[in-house]
Length: 274
Image 1 (cartoon, helix red, strand yellow):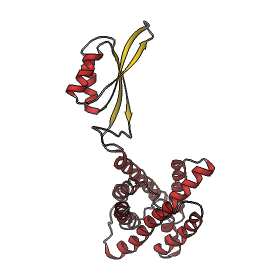
Image 2 (tube, rainbow, N blue to C red):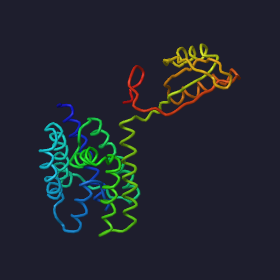
Image 3 (spheres, helix red, strand yellow):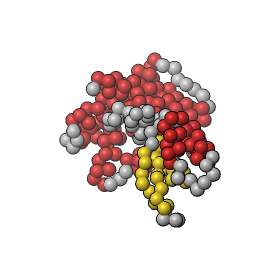
Image 4 (cartoon, rainbow, N blue to C red):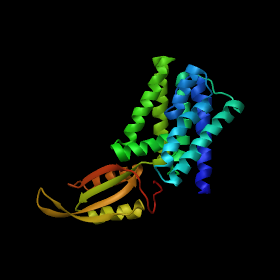
């Protein structure tokens, strides 16, 4: 629990830096309640921290009677740390003022790092997550669709005081942030699930085990073109190993067949992608 809280606090500090010192400083709009707080701040001049609290409080009160206290605790702690850090970084850290495209990319990268750190803790990271969970359970709306809708509405609401150019840059920032977050969660290395149908299955398996140091699985298969039994080999390899397997199988100059697809969420010996 202490480890989760530590990394949530670190992630939200980085998130607050991206929100205040990069996005808000360069007139870009963040997603979620942070983005709404920015819009209302620029329209009314109200304090951002106060707006964040006012918008989140009703959701947490409702959620307190609807969901487990553990889930609400983590979501509340995460949101509290973000709100707290917003006030700190606004007062003590310098703003990163630059051109819009540099702000969009740098804000997306820093925000994506923060999002990846928090999401790897597998907890709700704020009131938006609780609403997303409710809509998924009660209305059948996927979490991805919910975030797409709410973030689009938030960003385009800034047209009230801004222009379309800044909206485009804000969308670029959101895209970069999602890509960076995914990479931190899934990993930068690409792995492939390889299926090989060949009469040379013993030689290919020996190559996979000895030369590539990967495991392989045999599955009894049937070639429907000549109704002949063949052995299907399955293995999970990285990109460089996939190239090596292709070249090795091609060297037989026969009718061996290879099918490879990208595979995520790999857990086990020799792999560290979760």
